[in-house]
Every structure is written in C-alpha cells, then in structure tokens.
Length: 362
Ligand SMILES: NC(=O)c1ccc[n+]([C@@H]2O[C@H](COP(=O)([O-])OP(=O)(O)OC[C@H]3O[C@@H](n4cnc5c(N)ncnc54)[C@H](OP(=O)(O)O)[C@@H]3O)[C@@H](O)[C@H]2O)c1
Image (cartoon, rainbow, N blue to C red; front, side, top):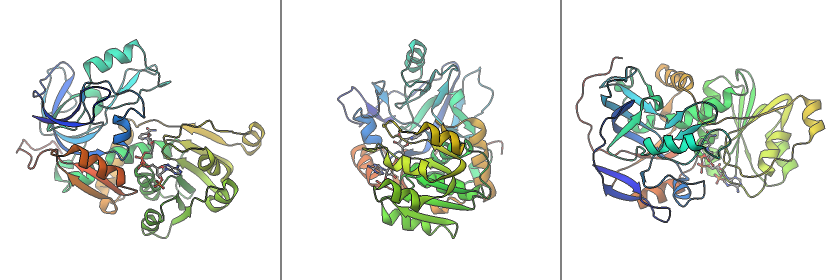
C-alpha cells in the first residue's frame, strides 16, 4: 500500500510503497478515510518540534473505517467509523503520539515510552493503518456524515475543547483565543461559540483570518496583535478565560497580553507551542486569584462530547474549509498545509473511493 514515510532524521516525507499492516494484539486495522495535515507538519519533519521515531509512516490522527480487529479487541468492530487520536497513554506521565512527535508528562520520555514507540510507531498518512485500540474512539452514526474531509478537523476541535474545559463551563462567559488565526485557534473559536460563550475574542496577526472569524456571528470580536503588550491586553480583555493556541513565538508577549487581559479569578489555559518562559508576577496572580493551566491533547470523553455536538448540529462544520489532497505529492501537500490559516486546513484523502463495508452499529 502507499504511505507517507520518513526514513531517517535528515530525510523528508516521501511517498513509498510499504507492506500492508497486519493485525497484532490490541490492534485495529482501519481504512484511512481522511486525515488533517497540521500546518506545522514540515517543521515536525525537519526536527524543529522534537525527535520523530524514524523510520516511520507519518501522521497523528484520522477518521477511519474499521476493517478488522485483533481477537482481544472488543470496543470497536468492522464497519465502525472511528477517530484515531494517536494518543497512547500508559499512565504516570508515559504517553506517546503514534506517528508523530510529542511525549506526555515532562516531555522527556522514558524507557517505557521507548518501548511503546517501538511497538506502536506508524501513523495514519497512508491508505490503511494498524492502530492501538486505546487510540481509537468510535463515532456512532458517522457512517452517515456526508463529508469525512470536514470531519478530519475533529482532533483539533477536541484538543481545543479539552483546553477550554480546563477553564470550567463557558456559558455566558467572555473568552479570548490568543492565536485564533491558526488551526487550533480557529477550532477553539468554534468550540467556545458552540459551548455558549457570551463573547469570543479572536486574537492574531492575520487580518484576513480574523475577518473570516468575525463572520461566524455577532458574539465574535477580533483583536489584531500589535506586539505591544499593554495595547494588546487592553484590546483583548477583560475576559474570564484566555486560551493560548500560539505557535512558536519569539517572545512571550502575546501570551502575557492574554494573561493581563483576565478578569479577577480568570483562567489562562496554555495549549499552544510557545517555547518561552512566562514572567508571571507572584503578587498579581495571588491577589487577582488567577489560574494558569496547561492542557495536552484530549480524552475519549471529550471526543464523544464534541462528536455529539457535531451530530446534533450545535457545532456546524460548514464553517471549516478542508483543502483535499491525495497521497501522490507529499511535498506539495506540506507546502499547502504551511500556507493554511484559521479555518482552512489540508485534508489528506488517501483512497480515491472507499471500499464497501458492513455498516456501523449506529
Ligand atoms: N496542547 C496540545 O495538545 C497541542 C495539540 C496540537 C498542537 N499543539 C500546538 O499548538 C500550536 C498551534 O497549532 P496550530 O495547528 O494552530 O498551528 P498553526 O495553524 O500553524 O497556528 C499557529 C498560530 O500561531 C501564530 N503565530 C506564529 N508565530 C507567531 C508570532 N511570531 N507572533 C504571533 N503569532 C504567531 C499564528 O499566527 P498567524 O496566523 O498570524 O501566523 C497562528 O495563529 C502548535 O505549535 C502545536 O505545537 C498543541
């Protein structure tokens, strides 16, 4: 079968013919229906985000259809539509993202995460994939969802939802998303609206992307980052919740503007890829009763909740714009992904037409 592989640390992503995956204990074989290609995939492959366990088939998450399951797998069955979240969590901080960079806990890894990565290495940018059963969440009724490409945004929506829920219920509260012009930020704006936020302030540099977010409805405000922390804080707040979804920034100023914009007893949640120390003043945090939290990936319960929001129509994915690509030209696909912003994203559709299978259990 065809797959996007990375052979060595100095290799790029290449389309290669690889052996068909075969079932092993705890494993589930899936047809990959659609996979979101993150905007920063090129940076991941270049090694800018930590080490990839090469050689491997790349790809952190997808929507797929179960073809076969190992005898010890009971939670999913052939025909089910599933989300592969890539997250394999052994507990006590030992968690890996299969087919990707990123380790749980301190991020340093351990002898146990090395062993996990030795068994569960290959990701989902391929026609088919063998997934650990723990990385899969069933999406009941998704076999009737008309557009798998759009549904492949689900992992980013779930990561955003986990970050937002770390700040408590959002209904009637004012929320800011710092980095809303990126894909995680765009997902967070959609999630906060679906969860009843009174206002959602979309914060970023890209005016076109901000304008598009403003078009989502009257509860969306925008603030274009100026780079001046006091000006940005005044433009963003006051808010009850600030969610930081920024990529790698040269300074912590945009994140700190989010912190400054909090109301008393507000919460700043860190979800993004900022690699800066945050200069948080002890007395200010203490007197204003603020909370600063982190959030990494999402859990099964969140996936089910977000899928139910989509299913019920409360979260309308017509706002997102998948740009479909096939497996043929990974370099062009990664270039395109790098140019996407906000609610646009590259959706890899590995197979031209899925094989007919037994219907899911609904
Ligand atoms: N915690 C988790 O579980 C988790 C999961 C997935 C991803 N992440 C992290 O989340 C981050 C964002 O992911 P994404 O998919 O949204 O990436 P993305 O689409 O590339 O978005 C990056 C965002 O960062 C902004 N940005 C980048 N450099 C900036 C700068 N110098 N100044 C101000 N803004 C800047 C971008 O603004 P412009 O639009 O103006 O360029 C955009 O809003 C990634 O770094 C990733 O590592 C975390």
